[in-house]
Image (cartoon, rainbow over all chains, first blue to last red; front, side, top):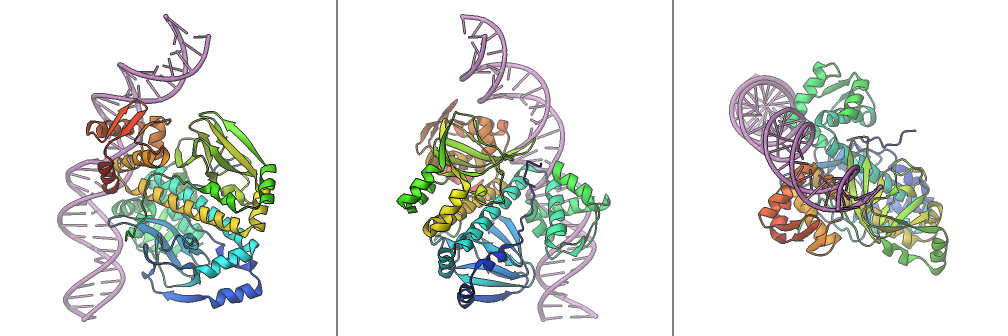
Length: 231
Length: 231
DNA sequence: ATTTATAATTGACATATATCAGTATTTTTT
DNA sequence: AAAAAATACTGATATATGTCAATTATAAAT
């Protein structure tokens, strides 16, 4: 009966890899033959905005951020955990450079899939194509939610949102060691580092979270949720 | 040699309708048989966030805004002129309500296309499916640009952006009568009505635009562009 | 043509959040 | 283990932009 999306600052999806289930055995072989696995260390650049791209990137394991950048600014579009595509922008033949960058938050493994093979699979396997269409439109919806959140909510709400997302969707635990820096958090929330720090302290002193350095413990989901909704 | 997207607050695309060229004569007939045309007057609601949806909407003629809303806030996702889809979110069978609303800025005609027929066409015509995939990923890119702009640029830059977009891409003329209210402009720029008015006056007094009420005349593209880039 | 409603404008004021600059802490390197 | 570098934190201050309230102009309705 809820008529709204859950507008959350967090964008993370969790089932992309499933689309490959629609492939036949033979198609799977083709896919494997025309893709490579690459390992990245924490902090390394997985793809660079503006660089040539002739492949689609799937995160096999790890965690990365996808972002767009200019000389001065940077905006994180989404977090991508294992099992999900970095993005689908480079399927289109007209898109021959990456429109975004991605870097690894933790040691990660990705699979690069040749674009023309990917397109061939789309052409010959309709069920697969439909899955991709569903992934693309779900992705849009998620970005819409994040967009709404970052432009309409106040800073406390955005931060509360991200904390909940990290606990519930990324790490799936109330206690976790955060591999992101305060600066990363700031970029995720669309605010300055200093503000993040002050607000985290506020949450901490009010007992909503416990925090020592990178160690986080989310205590009061209920209140954070409320702040996320009203903030 | 430019390695960045043009990050613009404006989101308007201009070739969706072309995807239907890929259909066969027979498929065209099926499409026509399973779609209806509906006319809307200025200001009327074309689709409502949260309402049941079993169809895809194509703007045949006119101009509309697609936006998401809560009790208190509203964010315009994009402007949709004739020839373009309102959105593709409702192709996915799991998405049985509209995740956004749309209203007409001017008298408009839309074509509602039955979802299951649309999916059938996707299944049986690969070229069509590929076109849709391209449209979806282009749409994501546009939203990314708008997202970046609204979260990273200052208000002057966002407004300059929107003015340029209206002149260059929506009305394709330096002089135009704006069917949007100042409030609409404000929502497009993600700022308050009053700020829009004040800034428009500033632009006006600096000779970047001429403006009497709803009549706009864009004079100094160069300067507006600079403000959009640096603001 | 008057009245009513809606939209546009202006000014005064408030405030959320950024910026800057300095210090402390943690992590990395040697 | 010491030095260097990177990150985290704190306080003081600035400012862009929002909010509120009042006024004027425009459009719609009777």
